[in-house]
Amino acid sequence: ETVIVLFNRDLRTRDHPALAEACARARHVVPLFVMDPAIRARHRHGFLIEALSDLRSSLRDLGGDLVLRRGDPVAEAVRLAGDVGASAIWTSADVSAYARRRQERLSRACAERRLQFRLFPGVTIVPPDRLRPAGGDHYRVFTPYWRAWSKTVHRSVTGPPRVVTLPPGAEPGELPAGPRAPYGHLRGGETPGRRRLDLWLKLCLADYARGHDELAEDQTSMLSPYLRFGCVSPAEVAARAAGYPGAEEFVRQLCWRDFYYQVALAFPDLPRRDYRPREVDWNEDAHAADAWRAGMTGVPIVDAGMRQLQAEGWMHNRARMIVGSYLTKRLKIHWRVGGEHFAELLLDGDVPNNWGNWQWVAGTGNDTRPNRVLNPLRQAARFDPDGAYVRRYVPELASLPASLIHEPWKAAPRVPGYPAPLTTPDNG
Ligand code: FAD
Image (cartoon, rainbow, N blue to C red; front, side, top):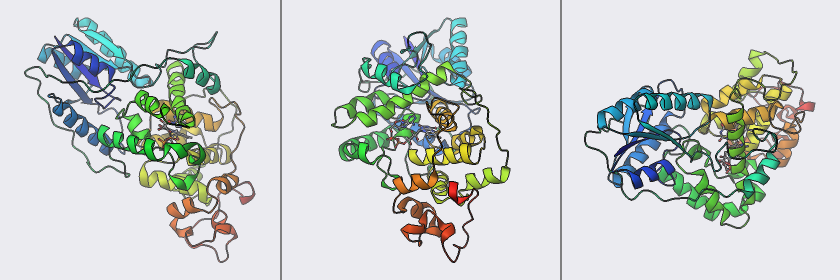
């Protein structure tokens, strides 16, 4: 028997339920990745190529290979099944509207050709359709979800398969062309992802609850791009973290990820429509939107976050909340403008987390206090008290003393090259 395992958001060999079961049950297994030209991922491309390259070398170490194709994943998987005489196509279930349409098409194409089609868990810790509140199809509020999630028995974590045996005639194909050097400083792949996980658990997790909101400290795991591409398994991250003292705050963040996946499953329009409709007179000021994107709003803490995103393809969570609140609640620019910019630049950009968080920030999503507005000056005083984060990303302000770094409009003479704030300084 030959089984095709179609990879997608699960670019790893460890704790991969579909791969593990295929290798345990079938004589031949074809690990397949299809580069879908319909998916725009210019800034994530380098990370993806590195992740594929790393997956290929892990599979080669196990005796197999990663088979690579380009085109429509459904057509390519089915064609390959014909070429190698496979009887089944298995894949990990994903939740975005695009992924679900692809899964449905694949399921139909398999049925027409009498191929077995199976969906496996692995993209989230708890499958997004598992937990339901009484009288509802999904959780709208995080805390009750967290309570239910914490009580659920999680799937047990598995190691890599012992061996992967390709069938004869499975032509591996070339890695897609494109920049190998990633943008940002994170290298893609299971190997660097696991290295980061190991080090971070050992050296930093203990300080997470205290320091994860401190902007300049880099006290968070930076595992999000690895989770985005499934280079590390979220279930394994949670299970291993739980073995360390003081892990609850971190595991709670991983639960937020699962929370938004179940929201996106229930509300596929999350990137397009208000989850909780709200009357807002949105501002269409293109100049303000451009200034926000460029990190030139004149509000240092906002500009530092936006420039970190530009430079690294990643932004601290606290900064994401500050820049998001500033855009949607102060400038009153639609959350879609912010979400699109993030989706384009973030290495970890994905549908449920990006749009779920944007709607949260804009007050159209799952926040139970939709009218809250984060004051950038107060946020800066709390989470970047000496201005180290601003100094790192807004070099033209670097020589200002701590008393002026977050309010450069008070400096005399004016700091050359740095704009006056778009909004009145009193309200940030
Ligand atoms: P850690 O603090 O180490 O947390 C560990 C993991 O928990 C993260 O890797 C992530 O998978 C998960 N997590 C943490 N916070 C959240 C959260 N608020 N929502 C969902 N999961 C969370 N995260 C993404 O992965 N992709 C996105 O596209 C994305 N867009 C965002 C947009 C906005 C406006 C905001 C406010 C947040 C967004 N986040 C997104 C959530 C969060 O900012 C990142 O997950 C986090 O900063 C990643 O850094 P880390 O891995 O060091 O996090």
